[in-house]
Image (cartoon, rainbow, N blue to C red; front, side, top):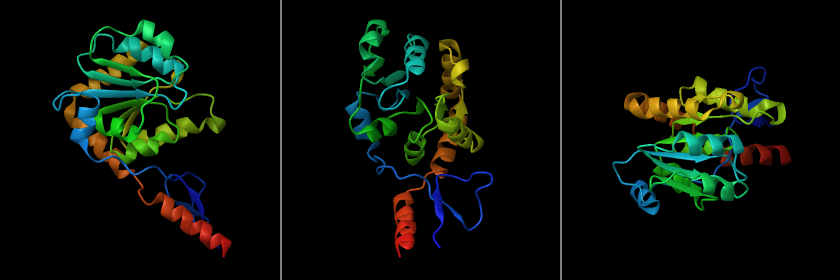
Length: 215
């Protein structure tokens, strides 16, 4: 009898019937210096990556452009195409803010940054694969509120700070990000905690269970 793969431990889903495999993600990018050069980020600069999935996340998009208008760190913001033109009119002046609709080879953006601001869907496993600390704002209308479950999983592990979408404001976002970037010890501990959640063999383990079921 094969086990049912699950992404991470869940209450009530334990025993031999379940196998924690993680979720398959692309292999992580590994050339940090090349990733930084791609986005024009200095080797000693701090960088925050903001994204909300392929369509973007409107609440995060608008909070970020206001929160980081005068930031002293670099911002790499993949906003999705839907809001891009409107955000372009609001984009803060200055070279520190790189606003894009989409980023090809997204792993390089994850590798280049010091901190991630994002939703909490399947991308949390890509964040972990790159060992990045995160500020997570779960999408509140997902099936069974699964993004909150994902975000709290990373929070309990010490890899993330969670802001409920209803509590997201530019001031709150700026404060949380500023506190983390100012505390390099905590940021490094969160990065280690994030990396510890990575499951690079997820695809192999899931395939093994599927083949066992087929037999």
